Length: 132
Figure 1: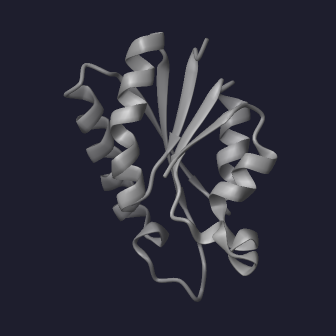
Figure 2: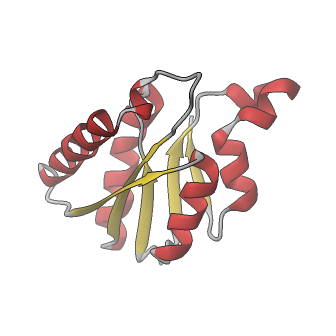
């Protein structure tokens, strides 16, 4: 059912909380796991996700974490706007499911426009499982 699973990751607690669910789904359906992290280039943002070295370390650490669960993951690092990049990669890898954490930023009218999760839900080429 879920041959290819895309798991966009960042350094958030919500991403860490989703790891167990991702592991369970990948094992249950014998899925291929793709770990994606997006380098967001911004002149205003000096966050961890704007540094390529930090993103590479994050991906390597996540790959190792899944390897401990006997799950082989393919890592993908891209640059761009997170929501659009996630959907583009989902299309490229022919993902049957995107699993992502949610920070709750879209719970207000103002936050809905800025919510990566909300945009992915609306643009994704496949089902999206949101882990609160």
